[in-house]
Image 1 (tube, protein in one colour):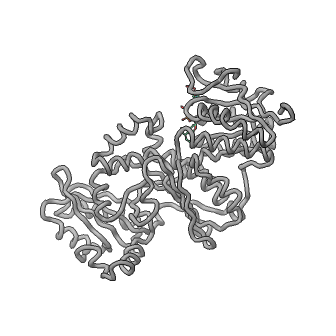
Image 2 (tube, rainbow, N blue to C red):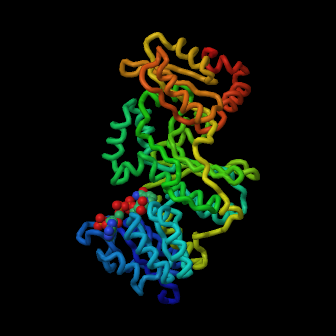
Image 3 (cartoon, rainbow, N blue to C red):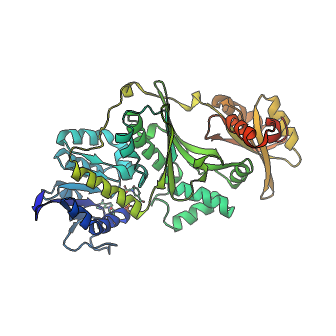
Length: 456
Ligand SMILES: NC(=O)c1ccc[n+]([C@@H]2O[C@H](COP(=O)([O-])OP(=O)(O)OC[C@H]3O[C@@H](n4cnc5c(N)ncnc54)[C@H](OP(=O)(O)O)[C@@H]3O)[C@@H](O)[C@H]2O)c1
């Protein structure tokens, strides 16, 4: 750290200068007068990229550009390292090298952080260095800072959200264009809305990495993303979308961490969300996060979860926070009592409301519904749609154990009026009956049976 006309000069090394890195370079130039007003200056001194000859979407005049990532991480004229290159190998080694020698790190790399968190914690401890990763969790929603500071002593029972913009775009596109998943994925990829490897988005891996970071800050316990129950959106069909809509729901990829006593359930999976709920209206690249706790009931955050400026701006705010308060770091952060005794709950212990979709033969609606009732499936709502020459029935159940749903599916598939194997999708709300009853008493005063279609 050097002095510049009485202002503290912080020399920044940056690993990566792609979408986020170029955005950060532009924002640093733009906000220089703000830095000066606060008695410091930020200067980009070294940048590492893969290809030094590539044209960049920012001005790198006077910056030493290299392909040597470790040299930037170890340079004596770097006061703070920014990692916006991604990956869980070289990027992690470089970030940890800087931390271990006392250089603060600001990283947008959710994969590296979520997969190698213990390494970062150990390196930060060795170097007594701060780390900021606001941009890695939900880009421009300042949720890490809120959990770390504003809600440090809050008892939180649930954090859940729509935290992957690409899957949200794909599901929104399927709904609006009436197309199947593959066509929507191709559109998202063509518009640059998916990661270079789209499986990271559509299989829920990106959301699981973010959930791992969010759960760490919410409950104080670290669980590797591979331990999170993760399902993507690849099996969602147009029939699911249309049935969900006709049952007054939308389908979203929901990431949720719920604590009950010493048990923590961590889950990323598609879910039907009732259209009266805020999460149902979060479209395209927007993210939303909902917190629940006994003293505040519910808190909601909505904002841009990806993109050049939202992400770069979150990186810059982390840099400024560390520059203004060098002791402020986010790892391991505010410790929460009882975190070490938290155990991961499996999905086998779940009991929720479920949506079941099945192909049915012409004219078999009533017979199938009646057979489902005889099998003991408690049905709250049902609807049928015709799509591509086939008929599909969708039902929403009352609360049932997931193990029961799983054991019933093959039996349902063997019913005479059913064509093909049925699939299930969880409902976002544990208790859909609450929603139905609340709506009825508020608007209709009608019976549950009337709202739910034909009684079963
Ligand atoms: N984009 C978003 O909206 C967003 C949102 C939240 C978090 N993030 C995270 O931010 C990070 C960066 O994302 P991005 O969208 O900016 O990625 P990007 O556009 O692909 O940029 C990656 C940069 O890293 C450089 N790089 C990659 N591997 C390298 C290596 N082995 N050696 C040297 N340089 C290397 C690339 O160099 P070249 O340019 O020479 O290829 C490029 O400049 C990722 O961890 C991502 O998950 C992104």
